[in-house]
Amino acid sequence: MELIKEVAVVSGKGGTGKTSLSGALATLLQNRVIADCDVDAANLHLILNPEEILETKEFTGGKKAVINPDSCIKCGTCREVCRYGAISEKFVIDPFQCEGCGACYFLCPAEAIAFSSRLAGHCYISRIGENGRFVFAELLPAEENSGKLVAMVRNEARAEAEKAGNRLILIDGPPGIGCTVISSLTGTHLVVIVTEPTPSGIHDLKRVVELAEHFQIKTALVVNKSDINPQYVQEMKLYCDLRGLIYLGEIPYEPKITEAQKQAKTILDYDPHCEASRSIQRIFAKLQSILEEIWTATK
Amino acid sequence: MNENGMGTMKIAFASGKGGTGKTTVAVNFAYFLAFSLQQVQYLDCDVEEPNGHIFLKPEIYEKYAAKVMTPVIDQDKCTSCGECSAKCQFNALVTLPGNVLVFPELCHGCGLCVRLCPVGAISEGEREIGYIEKGKALNNIEFVSGVLNVGEPMSGPLIQEVKTEYVDNHIQIIDAPPGTSCPVVKTISDVDCVVMVTEPTPFGLHDLKIAVTVAEMLGRPIGVVINRESGGFPPLTDYLLEKGLHVLMTLPESRDISVSYSMGNLILRSLPAYVEKFMELTANIGRLLGRTLWRNVKWN
Image (tube, rainbow over the protein chains, first blue to last red):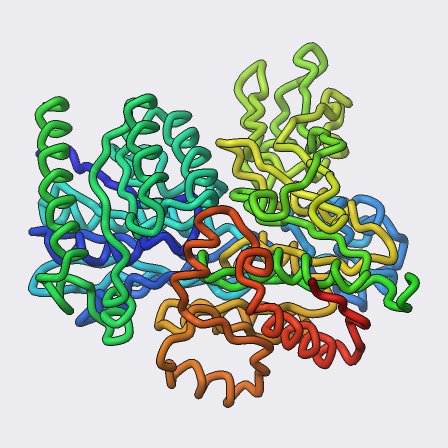
């Protein structure tokens, strides 16, 4: 069986158009398995409109400690060992401050502390189109361990791809460069960074490029809203050359992308002939040839 | 209390969805307040991708490494009993015959292993996760930013470190990270109010709802700024009405603002027509907090 390849779309800076691009690319893919790994703020389902949820899985997060006031002897050990200041003078644990380390639980001399995991989110396996699969998740508000939920989404997506004999998984990643991003891109075969020609875009781009280099993943760049500041676009192309990144192309600023989103559509479904849609089709063609190279290279 | 009788106050700018304009609103608000003779401190808690410095242009006068505790094993004393790795909740320790492996990037620095080890073979070392920068920014704004090392998953402790830099008698403007999980909780858990910057789109609204739930769970007062408004988005209006959330300011979809942003400029410097918007925002945040935030603004 062919090895499954994963492509992760990330950005560093938020709001550069990751999800709009991922959604459009998803509609162009044959035999698709799509994974939304932005589990804090999952949006891709709003434009991919899954037809049917095939399976819902529960995600249990880390454990949280709770003091049983009836058994508590108020010795103060827990307050002394907790490094997160989560335990009040009245021996009540603030669940938002509790890191889930278990120090209080393991060291309480009166065994007055309960320490158990709880439901922290859901992972959904859904159908899009005739036989496409779309895996997404929702972390419950204010929960922790989003990196682990990302791992769960990727595992489920791989299982679906194996079942269906698909060889490509498209991942819509979260913003930033931290825990969830690391979890979204480790072990992928290509990182597509969506950026914008602004100082913040460039600043954040460089950090996410370093991250991809850190994990030695082939990296490609898409510049969105490219006509806001053409000078920066030139700078970004130069940067790609210098760093050995693939320049995939640019998408002009297109208000119709927002209109499409308001109608729960991708830009390709909303207006396949606008300049942004045509740019995305060119980017897709280039992406496919890069993927073919990756497949050939690993055969 | 400072000369205007204001005292310390913490105002966080959050959003759920990334790229809605948190930083744009936060830095311009900081700049505006600093003009009204307030002592203002801006803290960038978006440590994965801090951008406030691009607009506030601080002169950095201090930079120091942020560190977390990480276990160091004395292999001579270690008996490979497995107690530490069995109880570590973060899988940061693995016991092998005759050896304990430490995975520092998984360690949350809780210190449990040090306390548990029956033979005292574990001590505390330090690991650098990023750095803190402090500086004087435009209009004399006190500037603090946390910068997470690339490849480092542990943003929480760095956010905590940024927040140890609170200066008394200043109004604190806190730029929160995007998302709705632990980094946001760490950032906004102790603030006096949260300003949610959203955009009138399905994505913006979906993530706003989760972010509002987080702030409600933490018991923080909430106000909303609508950015890139063009032609209205009834589902957002309905939601705000239903929740009784106040709109503190609305900024239009504007090519001028985008271009100003793309050059690293503050809106208030390049497009002074927006001063009134920020006066309105300031008055409305004051109303949300039940206080007056500014007096005698002399805008030039």
